[in-house]
Amino acid sequence: MSGKSIKFQFVVMIFLFVIFGAAVILQMFYINRLQLQQYCRIHETHGMISSFLKQDQDEGRILLRLRVIIADRNAAAAAARADDLASAIDDWFKAIAAWLDKSRHPELSENVTLGRNSAFAVKYLAEKKRQADAYRRVLDCCREGKFDDAQHILNIEAQFQPAARDTLAVIDRSVEDTLQRNLQRIRLIFLILSIGSLSILALMVVVGIGLYRGMLDGIAQMDMALRRISGGDFSSGVRIASPRELALLANSFNNMQNTIKIRDRKIHEDSEDIKKINEFLEQKVVSINRTVEQLEIAIRQKNEEIDMTLEMMAGELKSRLTMIGTAGEFLKHLHDRVALPEAVIHGLDKVNVGLLHLTSMSEQVAELAGIGRDSMHIQHLPMGAVLKNISDHLHFELGVAGAQLQLADDIFDCQGDGAMLEQALIKLVQNALRYRSPERECMVRIESEADILFVRYKVIDNGIGIAPEYHEKIFQAFFRINPPEGGAADGEGGLGLAIVHRIVTLHNGRVWVESTPGEGSTFIIELPKQQGR
Image (cartoon, rainbow, N blue to C red; front, side, top):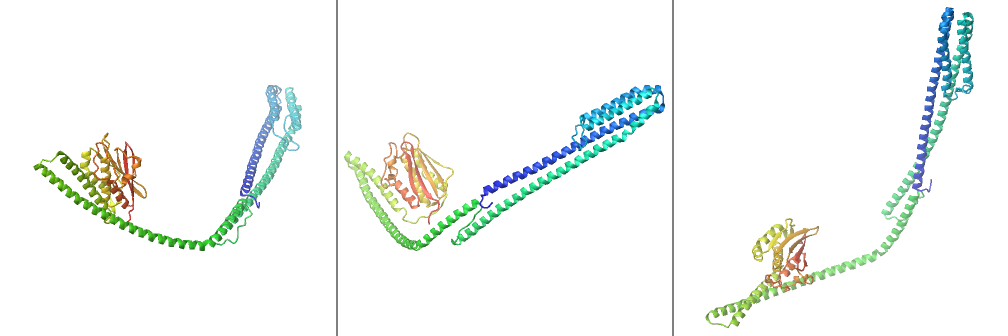
């Protein structure tokens, strides 16, 4: 089956297997059928012979009773027994006729055939009828007292008994001959079917071995080719003619090998150019890294200069505001001695309010400038305890605002500077209190979530919300949204969320807001799980 597909060879094997199975089943069925026929024939023959022997025994009894009557030589006694014996003779003959009618046995031999109309049956029945008539004549002679004539007839009929037994022997031999012929037929059929089954089985073995060797040789060639290619040798391909599936696979493998060979040659030819490009890129990366480092140093220096400038300005502003506040206090004390105009008094009140606002702003500027100047202390933070501190710290402010602060049960820990992150979360809660809605009780909730890389803390409120155009601007310094009617005054000077942004940025994180005007806001702080030292 060279060049044939695996599917075709499997179909052939299955077909041969079906034929083999059918031959075995046919063999079993036919042999069982012949055995059953043999059993039926033996059983019928046994019944036939048993019936024949019974008839022969009945005939022997009739002869014995006739001999007893003849031996008595008593005509009156013979007449008394004659009717009963005549009835026995009739029953014996009827039994013979019934035996021939019931015999359905087929031909037993070339010369013996049973059945009511067979030549053997007609001859045998005529002979038995003649014997029955002879026995009746013996009875008639006995009734008439002719015992010598009766004895003579009886002696003649007694000679036919051995002939009847010879008939039985013929039937028995015929049955034996028939059984021997059937046995030879069974042996011949068994031999033919056995040879056919073994031939089919041998053909199946040959086909299976051929299929196995073809597949094994093809797989071995593919394995050798793969080992050769893994060693970098693309010099020769794989040649497989059968089975067809492996031949197609070998053809695809050769095409793949040629493609890899061409690609490998191209890669080898371009390796020098790639090497030069890599060297050039490495030099560029080094130059860019150096530039980035210089920019980071310059930015750090600028930030330090800005922070120092802001802190100096805040300090100078605070000293000037202190002088102005002292002058205002002096004018108030002067008003106790000398009556001042109402316009002056009203102006002094406005000056005091402005002084308080500017003083708070200067403090926030100093706070913003001071964040990050000193080294951060990064450590593992149990945020549950941190949030508990925040709740205690804001207890008074929450009571004044009539607000509730809820802390989720499952708060994830993080890494960072504890004081800074606590300050950022306090700023977010204070912002929620400042922009609370006058229409409902203020509710603030802090919860957390985490994934593989980040942990997020959410400060959720039900305040007035923030319009989408302000979602990024609110984290800029000195930008603020006026609080609603009934909200607290902005004591942060627009720097509270800027401080939060600065703290989160120093932790390599980010902060943003998700808000719907009129429904509330959610401020989200996202921090890496692992902070750089």
